[in-house]
Amino acid sequence: DELKAAVIDRIHQRNQSRSEKERKRKTAIESERKRAGENVEDFSKKVAQKKEAIIALLESAKKVPAEKLRGQFETIMAKIFELQHFAAASTFFLPPYEIQQARKIVLELQNTASKEKSRLLPRRRFRFSKKRKPKEKKEDTSAPSGTGIVFTEGEKLFSLVKGDTMFTIENKSDQIVKVKEEDLKENRNVKLSKMTGSQIHILHGLNTLRMTDLKTCKIYVGPVSGPVYIERCEGCTFFFACRQLRAHEMKECNVYLRVASKPIIEHCTGIGFAPYSVEYRNRERDLVAAGFTEKQHNCWDQVCDFNWLREQQSPNWFIIADNKRETTGKL
Image (cartoon, rainbow, N blue to C red; front, top):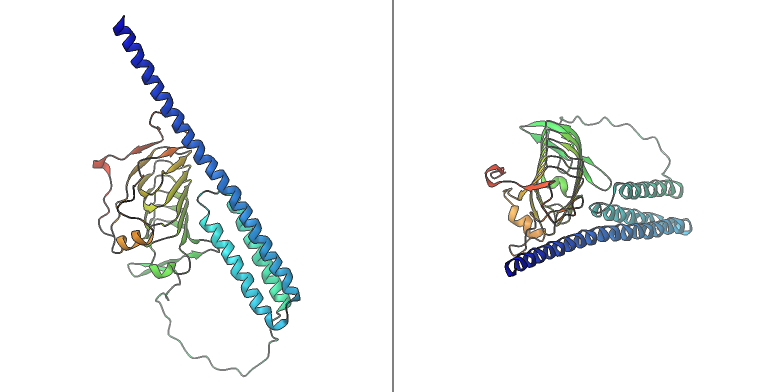
């Protein structure tokens, strides 16, 4: 009887322990969800405030003396750019609808500012002048600094698309893309979109990174000081370090990761994780600049699956076995 009671007691304690772990897990997930919701609400309020401030500046421009109008519109455009940057830096936790609304607001403000500037600061009338024979220029096949032209093996591949809020590379198939550091001087918020079977090398520090609609691609990225957001990617391999990771609708992808907080996945299947393993010339410099230190804990294997609330390991992700991990060498 004593042995039976002891066994029952152990079983009871084990069940209590499991229940407590599951409760803590659910609490942690609900906390993450609540935090994301609060971030979205806070973002919407700040966008509305910034929008109202810009509209007020546009209204006051009607009463500004002509000699001060140019400075007024420079201030307005700076405020719109500030709003663009804020929206780009917040893409990590925003659902697609909020992102679209923010872009719509920025575009509307840009159009309104442009129209008001044309109305209040009309261009000078065109005057004829003597025609001068233009000097003959030799065709320059090299890419000027900062144009975003990428060359591989001496051949021009394509021009990068510099969006209003993100530095974007998109619509590529079966290409190797190497982005130079000087191409990122104006904008280190990067978006990769709609690509198949391509390799992307951005071995420099970034502020934010967003990747959508990629298939069978390999992405090599330097440290990201902010968040990384991945959506609708399939059969891809990613190498990056970041402060936060959130992934939606990923299928059969491998992620070589260094991250300062627990990675979040949602509606994902077959995702493998391993430590960040990319080596390149300025890697240590970029890690320090992005805020990573040797003492900082790497949470690469502490994945939080929003679609799995049980105590057992989620079937949607796994740790890549040592003998199956990719080695990149020095890039």
